[in-house]
Amino acid sequence: MKKVSAITQTGKISDVVMPMIWFQESGYIDGPILSTFYTNLVVLPAVMEYMQYGFIALGLLTILIASLVHHKARVTRVTVLYRRQGSLSGASEKQQIKDSLDHETKEKCFIKNSEN
Image (cartoon, rainbow, N blue to C red; front, side, top):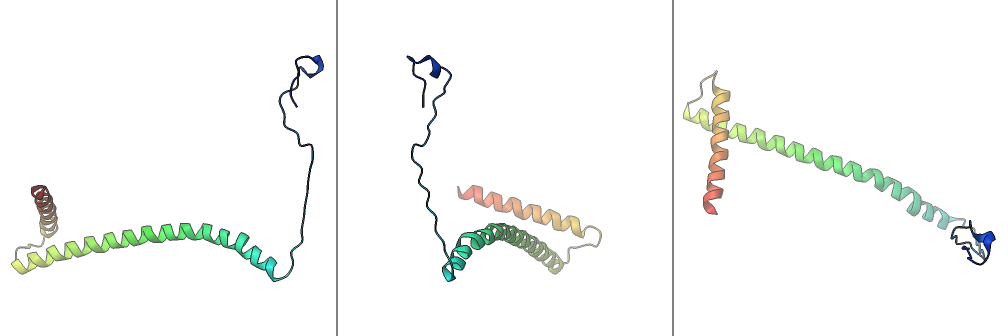
């Protein structure tokens, strides 16, 4: 429906689409096909929605654990190297390890920059 300029009674009508014919069909499903449809269209999408968040959390946890293991292995390697050299003294052990880690990181950056 829309406004017709020659008919004054349609002056306040806004453009609207109205159906002229309406069809409605329905059906009935029973038995094992109903449970298959319910499983595939209702249950699995709901389960998959929650599983995606679980997998995201599992991935983040794996990254966190890997980072902690890498850091622990790096600190242990430096500690073992210093103990072999006999250069660790009790109070300054942490500072020497930190300095060694900083030196190792700077050395890796220097090697990468010199390759370019």
